Image (cartoon, rainbow, N blue to C red; front, top):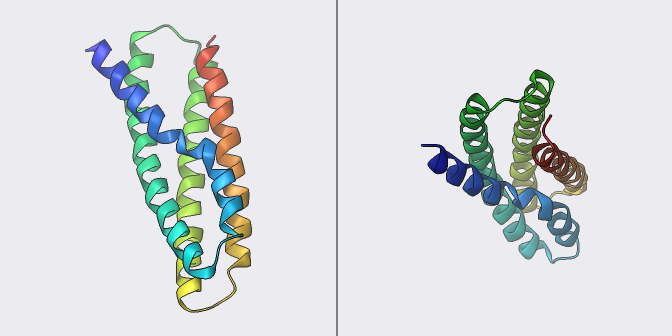
Length: 139
């Protein structure tokens, strides 16, 4: 069972890896034409949803792996808090993605949504890097 959970955990990590690339993708969206921006934001929205499912898989499989190992309580609390923060920010970013697509379709200015996307994508990338460091160096 442990090997299966590690495999599932790695699959979840691959899907969550999208958040490391996201700041670069969001930065490139501003340089595109309006129809291309709509398509790109729609693609980011789809990948964000997949990555959110990956985060849930990570949380469940990681919970099982934590229950089988001996980790410090502070480490486990920090891991759960970072996961919940990532899920929350990804969910909030989903609203900005939805509003960005609607704004383009209604021919409104979406600069505020682009700014939020840029901020959320950077925060998610930083949180993921912190999570990777914590996973490699448990206490």
